[in-house]
Image (cartoon, rainbow, N blue to C red; front, side, top):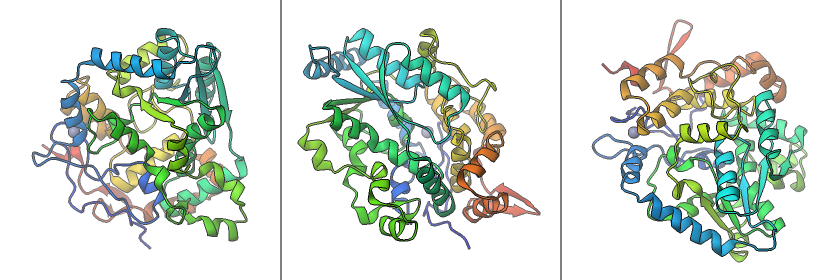
Length: 405
Ligand SMILES: [Zn+2]
């Protein structure tokens, strides 16, 4: 049975400027929660240019000195002078959380607490980077979810949504806010370049609105939440999970956030985010090591998403559902940052996109308690008809950006 219920546009289009595809899901959160549909896919203007590229055009007009000043003024409002925590930085110890925590501590003399929702399966390099980050002078709260529950939810998310990352993504999403509430910290600063990658209409001049985007999931009603593709009721009845087991994955009510006047900011609204610059910054601080294999599977970069053994599979399932994978994501961003040309991006996509994540394949199967046969059966059942065709025993993309002349 075909499980393609994500509802992307049937006509596949690639951005004229980068290599992004209109098959991409805009909000990584939305399709993870809602069972049967994606509300939005990547948007293009009538010239065939994606909104991420348009976002970069807007970025060039920004006066970043003004933005930094504004950032500094906001921090003043939250600064505590008794040395207690005044800002929370969620992160894994990757280049973006390193950048954000150092800037806050060293440049602005704030007192950050860092917090981390542990990956399901730490890679060696992920654990090394995490320890290095923390041992450089940061307090950290590391939350490791119940392994049995997390692996069951990961299994269900793979089987029902072809999205093994969903439980992690959901848990991580509300985790920082939970810590902020518990520790009475009123400011959360996210370090990731989310707005650079999320494809939608993001208004750089309306930071409040961007903040609201990140609050989106807090508005969800519980009957709309399908953790692992299963309703909360069924998870309790059929799988014997308790409400307490599910709590870490569920949204926090919006009222709770507003009543406690918690502010969520993205540092990318105030600093001109650049993945390579952040990487060099982290390297200079000697707190970050790149992928020891030289590059990550499915792409050509060596410094993004290194900490979870399931990362490779996550990006692979993304490729199955949308026909665009991790290399597309990385290459599109590098085109926008003028690191590579569109033609170079096309050949990188051709070469690396959709590479099978074999390095931790067995670990992933064990973690999800799934046989190889069920794995491939599930994967194939999620290949949308308008994206894939089968030639003999081989699957191929009906339309790829590198097919263009
Ligand atoms: Zn584009």
